[in-house]
Length: 130
View 1 (tube, one colour):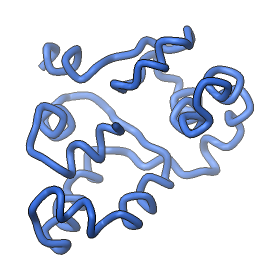
View 2 (view 1 turned 90 degrees about the vertical axis):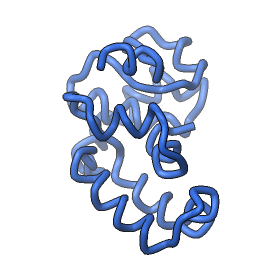
View 3 (view 1 turned 45 degrees about the vertical axis):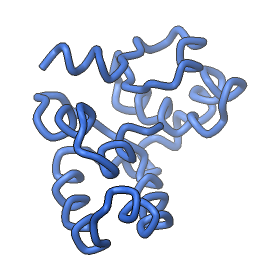
View 4 (view 1 turned 60 degrees about the vertical axis):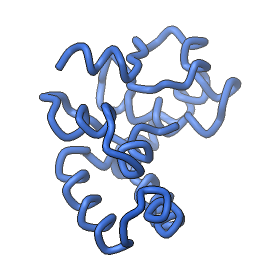
């Protein structure tokens, strides 16, 4: 699952990494609408109120950069060539990585191992770096 969703649902290594690591994190802007679409469900799973979850989201998005579509849109075709045949839902994440010129992507999704453009960092890799 996307680390952002994991972080919202429970206090975990993922949350600790996002909130304390001296690393820049970025997500495509549509992540906000996805979270909003599932806000009640996420709040229920996290055992918090929607208001508490919204407050935490404000904190979280102080440290996680939201990348506007206009910034990563020029990279969509290249991103599709990298990961689109494996999972088209991951194209925006690869496009953001291309737009920002990063070397690594944080994901626990094993299918990212099928691409060779970015180093894949798992949660345990980042946790060990703290």
